[in-house]
Image 1 (cartoon, rainbow, N blue to C red):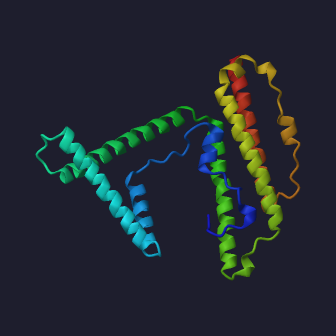
Image 2: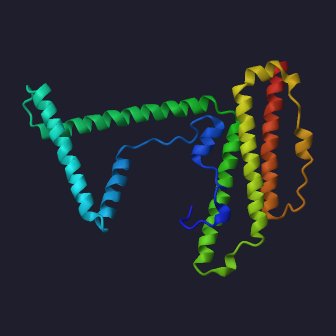
Image 3: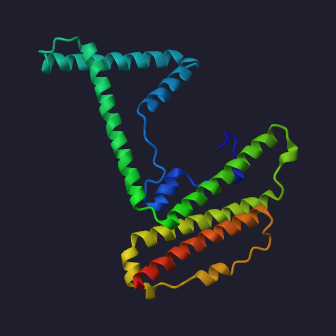
Amino acid sequence: MGKAVRIDLHGLEISQKELQQLTNLPVNAQLIIIINPLKNLIKDILKKLKGSEGATVIFLSFSIFVLGYLIFDIFIKIFAAWMTIPSWLLLIILCFLGGGFTQGFLYYWWRSRLKFTKNNLTHSLKILLNDVVRYNAVIKAIDINDQIEEAGNAGVSIKEREKVIAALKLTRDDLIRALKTERILRENQNFILKNTELFVNNLAALTAMQVTEEATEHGRLLNEALQIALDVQQEMNSLQSESHS
């Protein structure tokens, strides 16, 4: 989101880390490219070089580089004196080989996580993940709208903002509740199928929720949250039906 996010939007977005904790699955796992952290490190160093810390950064960076090379050179002379190529060239070769091996391992690990997620992705979880994307998109849209308003466009301000924020909080709570419910169902599927009589059907309580302002943004969001809860309930019913088939 934007740099100057309004305080009422803080904590509303469902982060990637929180989503993975709620589902206990590496959903939306991203492949780590080892060159990216190096790029970020170089950017940070260049940024500091332009500031008052420039001399200190140059000294520390050079000292670390020289010290690392000297330790490596001493190690080679002691344990690999038979090496005929210069130690600096060997260091470069090892860095490339190490980088390639690390990237290969990260790719294998990423593919394993994708496969694990795919094997455990239920129909309800797919729906919930899509709803999380839509929900976060609403938060992002509001943040962008706030930035446009702060740029001097007062006419784009969100009407009844407090109601919209309150609706988003309710939707967030329902999403989290639904994700937790889906995880419980998924991780205890065998037990539930064998003990369906132990679980109370709360569908009546959910459908009793009345949304009186369906045309408003917060009413639409509440209806979406209710639909998510109903989707989870439908998944429970599906599991129970399978146990009797």
